[in-house]
Image (cartoon, rainbow, N blue to C red; front, side, top):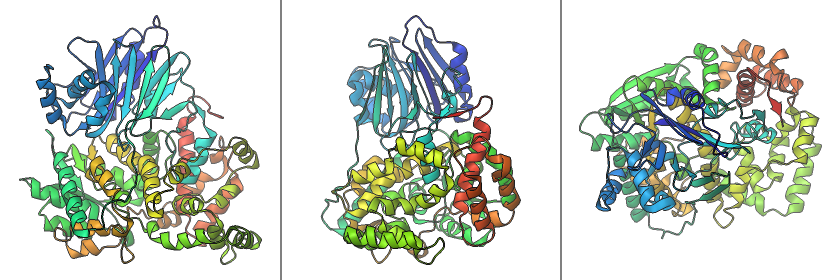
Length: 629
């Protein structure tokens, strides 16, 4: 895996400074500890940090075609590059390396922007075409690899990480109030927002063209649709799913460096390890992270799978007394506020795995693609709520919720029922419910939001699938938001912080497209999700794993904030800690902290959200003060 960056000046006479490109690349040295490179030619500068996985002795970037008028910087892996290379050689293209990067260059020469439809992998790349004076940037279909960009009046810049962009002092760092609102609501900043106004994330499955005059054109080259149009044939579908997953795992085993797998003991990572064991001649190196708190410890389930498939298994544990020291590093790596606490075990398992391997396969994506989340099981009840007449649901039940005093029995449930379907789903997955947000934010900040209402990417995704089933709408929304901006961001940043490449077979785009055609009845059955996935691998995995209830990558925040992290939370969230966050009501924060530590309710996710925001503010405000706009 790698880090890419670059800048295009719109004034052809304004040259790129070498020092600028180097400062951008060196801010991402963790993404590519093996090599650094840059190409500067007049108004264009490209930078690259390399983590060597394929063609270790060659393949340095930036890399060009034979004539030197097409240059690329690339982050990711193209799994079908041998087949593409064979096709291109037959078309008389001449190769100097064995790398997948060079395949993209020649494929672009052959197909232009249509090259994207032929690439199978995870990728983010930028191609400078000197013949057209045009920058061509693209991101993989599901957004596994990141691209941030800034389009100013004088120049355009892009990078794999936000820190590389703001290494350029000419790029402003004003906080986007809408992005901040979304962070508080969801625990991450959703695409296309970034925490800084004017800096955006390229959407997955999209390309971006930038010409020498600064004209930007962005468009999708791939779109996912949940059609659920397959015949209701369990046997046929389970066989197809099994075959596609085997293919997805096998193609991700290509590597010239040591390779292993994350193993949680759940069905997703277990089936990936089981398939790897059947395909590799040597024992699979597997890595598990556990907690000392028994209710959150899954190491026994992982050990059962490791024993079944005779893996070379490694286990380590997260200790609560390390979190205070670790938090600043995590916050710094994400560049913008991010509060999924499972980043902690993800960091530790990545660091642990990197001691033994350079590439690891994971089970990420299985819950979104095969409907594994517990929240998907409430669908039928919520469909009934939606069918209620508006006068009953919104006016009668909603009115009752409003008149009940705070803390009264049933108040929150009535408020939940009164919402539209998207509101109820937002309540399930959000960190701060809207009722809590209203108490947390100052009246002035709420007025600012009301005058410029934030566009909610979750709501846009949900409403775009109105013709699909309610389950499909939830799956699609999660793939376009939660998976994209939480799960994949978490894994990318934590693995890259440790210079580890992580591959996700269950997010193979052909598998995802097929799963979107599976009828809802085969995703859920008998009060459980992943029905068809369980059936497809019932002979490979032990019954305990097949029947195991969804647990998730849980973190014992509830216990930590009432124990070892209690004083730390108070010191970090009260008093002067909120200076610079004028949109937050200090009394509301104090109430949240007291409610949790007194045991009245578990609201540890809210505390973790605020704690990450406060630490991000500390880091972001140095050396210059941020403006809220």
